Image (cartoon, rainbow over the protein chains, first blue to last red):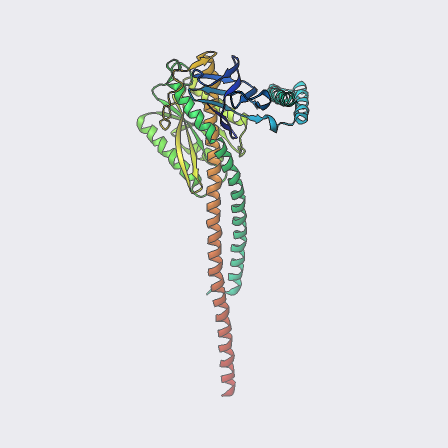
Length: 140
Length: 290
């Protein structure tokens, strides 16, 4: 089945895949070929992709995503998100520092706007860190 | 014939104007490249969003969702996107022309009209028009608008629509089709998924909605509508830079022609002066010899 991961900054992935795990508001869902048509809301989290049946776990690929829309149809899975980042592009140390900064910003936020923005950042970097961690574990 | 002095100073002034237009052309060119990349990059997202909206709007239970509700259009909100600055060729006048056409059309159909103006030029024009009421003005948006600016525009459009103050929301922007073609366009944004240009793909009509149709619609519709406004802003900006670049290139070319003409004229004037002087001298010599 075809997976299209589309962000505001362009098409991140457009490939034939076997299995996808997507974080949605109703919990994580796994999608295999022949899944029933589905539309759902994606939440910030980790997308896990297995390209071929029988690929070992170390070949899984991870993407950190922000919220968006998931559309599953007969032959295609379309994920529309504001941002998506490939696990390989995330530097763990950087994410850790960014998360620390975001948490500090949240604790010092003066008004609602700042607080919301900080929350967003914290979510984002938490997800990124999670992706980086997952990748490290699997590769070892 | 003008004196060489006058011509010289005119050449100098045209040359300095040329330097300015040349600089503006280069600035517009580099900004245009970036804007073009941005609008190209987000195009697949918007396209997918449009298809998804169209598909969802075919679903039976969406008719009652506030963003999808179709009503007879008695009042209409137009979001007009123009630029903050002039000197962009026909960019602003094209938008304003389309806007005027839409206003006349509304006037004929007895539809009341309100406007949200984006860009100083759009605001100035809308403020002078009696047929419309200006709801909001947004100026000096960055090339890549982020959430806060976008959601301000979107929120007021949504509030107007869901409260029933307006029955439709259209956006007027300049569609960046290619580097040689930028077309002012009207696009319906609300009610969502009513765009004639998209074909029904019909895959999602019978799809399952998780956790529930209402929740999916709430989470999805807003975002997808937002993407369309975002794309319109990016397209407009790319078109603006493109047209400004062309306008400034023409201005530079004209300045070059003008400098050539003036130089020719100045050379003629100088030669004329020399000839005259010679004639006077030889005339003087003749007179002495007699």
